[in-house]
Length: 374
Image (tube, rainbow, N blue to C red; front, side, top):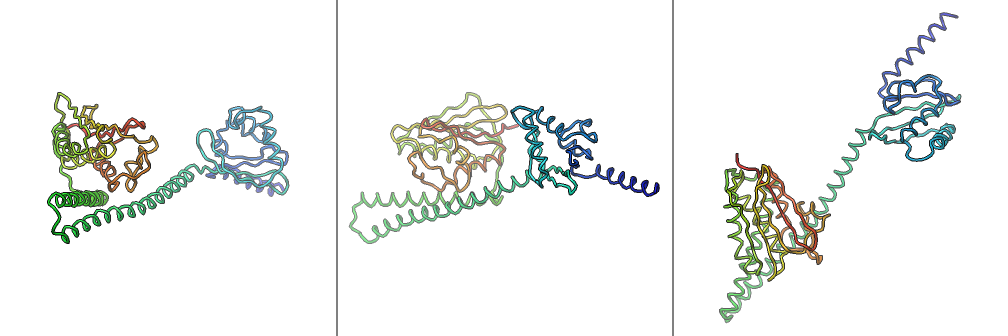
């Protein structure tokens, strides 16, 4: 009989020692809610001191320890303990997730035993929850992007059709009516030319975005004079600003600023920002300021307008592809809506950053940086 007892004790010892190798925390309480067995993972996951894991320890001591360190929030400690003991006394099967103050997410499963008491396991599911949340966020973002892309394609289809219809209509009028006077003929030809340029800009935006997105954009990185770059872009846009009677101001530093970048692509960014500012600057009283300044290890380019401005919650959205922020009146501005997305891709590739500062109705300031030349 003594040999049988020795075997049984040996088996029990083996089982108890085996619990220490479980990846999960484990605890066993009897019908009187006293600790029968637990492993180190149970104490570690719940951040309990070693002395709390002594055999025979009442479950209430664990609840009281948690309550005193604030795990259960504000309230009378003894009342908090009493409520949890009442729930544990029901010995009902349960499974729930608990977020500890340190951010760890535990999955807790409790199972009642036939003779009273219950066994509980504790699993750290923090990594799994993080992945689930990341996947859910990615799914939501992909759905939003897909919806925005569909809306964008519908918009582009409409915007391509509009100038084509206009060009065709005026061309037919010019072809059918030879008696049109010279002034009106010149007016119609001007409209046709303007609509052709609009089409070219839209198609160029689409092609540039497709190239950048596919990683097939050609880059020509060189040492550049930032002031010369800005002066060139401003000069090319001056006639357009004059036509709309919007003032265009330029502020350059006294000292030359050398940068590393692609001349054509940075000119594209500047012209995009200037064209964007022109869209929203009020006619006759509009004012756009272009500024260049050294900023730490970077050179900062800024284009500031006195238009209606952009709401704070839209600041990140304006640089997203397939999105176009509505004006203050609720109307959609002209253009493909890809200009700022292309700007962001170019600036990112050149090692800079781009952002907007704006508080409606006090205009908007678009800025981007490019690293200094070595």
